[in-house]
Amino acid sequence: MSSTPTPYTETLAAAQARLAPREQEVLRHIAAGHTYARTARRMGLSQHTVDAYLRRIRTKLGITSTAELTRLAISLEL
Image (cartoon, rainbow, N blue to C red; front, side):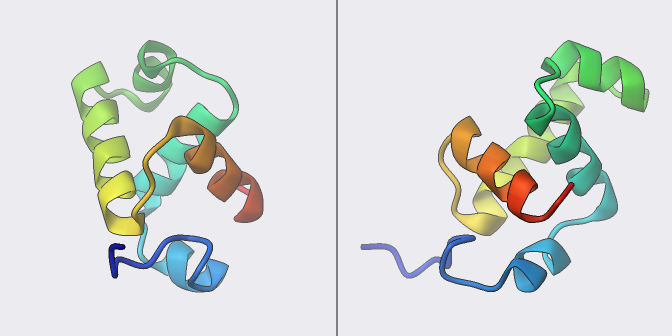
């Protein structure tokens, strides 16, 4: 098993502290059900950049699915 902490094994405050403000903003949009394209338009980014932010979030927090990302966003009250 991996020794990488997951959002479920570390405190929510620590998880949030590990995310940059733009990463939190992307996470908020995706958790609200927005597509990558809609998120990109609202944030003035390309879809590729939105995807890059989400890949970084997954890597930082050891998350493997969109469902886990959404669960984290809800837990962080984003």
